[in-house]
Image (cartoon, rainbow, N blue to C red; front, side, top):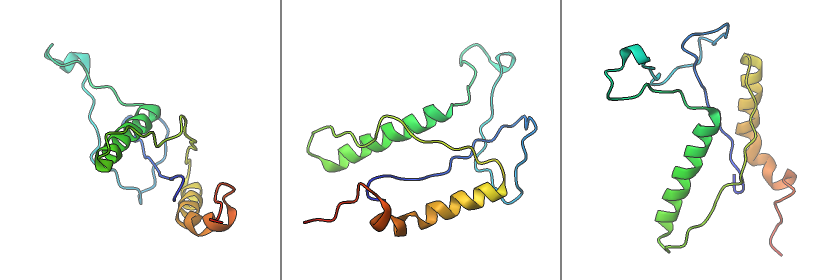
Amino acid sequence: MPNHMHGIIQIVNEERRGEVLSPRREVIAPRTERTIEDSDGGTPPLRKPTLGQIVGYFKYQSTKKMNLLDGSGVITKFWQRNYYEHIIRNDDDWDRIQHYIESNPSRWIADDKDNVPPA
């Protein structure tokens, strides 16, 4: 999308506290967590990042890369301050959101109030 993006971030709870994961969802490189008991005193325990930290890190890294690619030396901000989130709770919700994301570019030209055609 020219003025925004959509994505799905899947955070897997290794303890599975009552959550139901569909078998068609694949977990890529699950993160293991060390406890204080496992620590040898040199490295603090790993903490799972929050959604806000994940989004913030993505925005930080992508802004840094885009500014490097620009090469002008001017630091440009690309992202709005906040983000919109929705928790996907079941397969029907997943399918609806996935369809919305896939069909969003075709709706942008007609439906986006920020899309102003050149004069």
